Image (cartoon, rainbow, N blue to C red; front, top):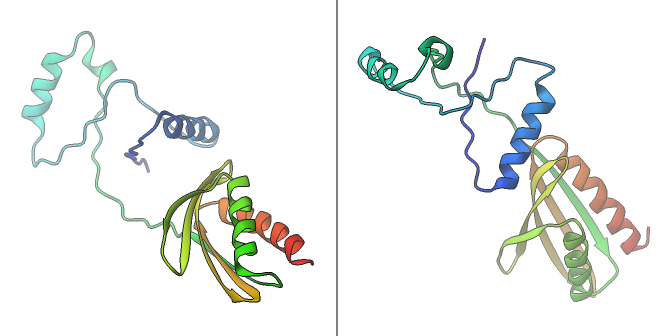
Length: 171
């Protein structure tokens, strides 16, 4: 069965990541990224539109236009979620500075904060994820990392954060 996938992107870097993914998977399945334009229409009978479209095409229409029937597919891909919790024998401010350092080392960008938590977005070679950090404490600190994303990114980030926090917390 064939699928048509419409993917919007905002930056050239995002487009390049999509192109890389297409190249990576093209050996495992038939993947076409057509030159030109992709048009999706919903109509009982598209023949009038197609007739006018064909009249605008130079050269052999059959070589330039592929027509497929399509219907939306609502397959939900489940994301991954990992929660890491630590008790660190340091003041909250010291722990927050270390977390800021750690997340900058992971190239995470702050996307939101409130009095309880900070939320970061990070893109790795393994994929994209969000990290929500909740820090509480007086004397010693309790830290919770909620990592959400797709593919290998969540486990990769959880491993990196766990390694660094255990070293920082002293074991």
